[in-house]
Image (cartoon, rainbow, N blue to C red; front, side, top):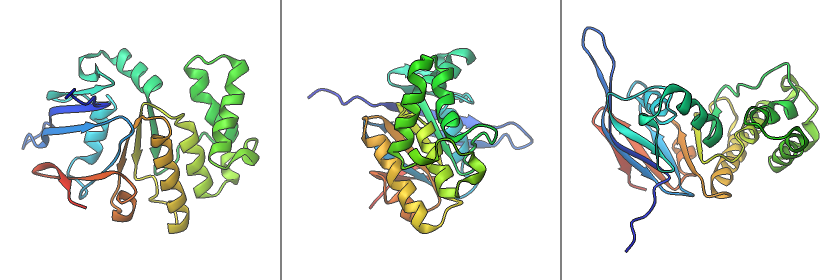
Length: 227
């Protein structure tokens, strides 16, 4: 039988931060995420969830081990190449939205397309299609300050542009339960609609239940949580 292809492959990943105790934050992490798979990572504060996300995104480098996305090993790339990987292959959704207040909703969604070099003649149409997909077509010319928290998060999902790897860090932390449910459904659809891969970092068991499987990160490492 042919070996399955992992969209994201993390092998023997370890990270230690200096200081008086030279603390090991992550040690020997192993994780494979298949195309179209959407997983959750849970864990108490301080166990290294943010560190793991930074390593996956190539914002930081491990002391040992590797991170490969679509067969390309991020840990072997230089700073510029990792920046290009984030730009072209990754999408990020944060708890704090991070929409630019001086740009319209449409301009916020179009900005990554512009940075990636999409022709101006195509950028507006593609951005509008993404906004319509998350139910914000009528808010395209509004500014973020006029949107509700749920609308801002939906705009942030549209801005992620169906990437090869979607990283969502506590995306429903500022939302009420009804709005959170809609946002979680959109995140799942974002991954499933184009066979990318998605990682949801959350403290919420209800949010984790919307993914295909849940991993628990503890001081002892990363373990698959039984449903």
